[in-house]
Image: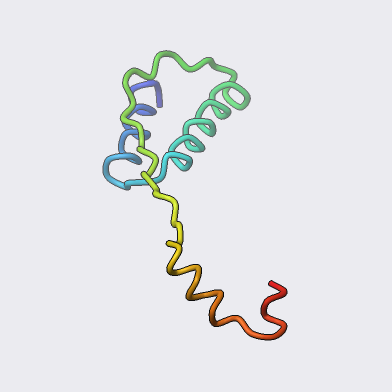
Length: 81
């Protein structure tokens, strides 16, 4: 297995398997470790790897009305929270 196969594997993870960016990065680090520390070889140019994208996440924020509704329902010792 050489650079083209490594590139194909990492691209496959992103395109076909749709793994997260951190999973693809872990696979890349594992391949680099295998080559450098186990096989004693340096990895050449992997070319253009299709990278997984980090999902766009919007923060969940409660509106003023939602906060008021929650607070309105708190009674007795629940206010301690």
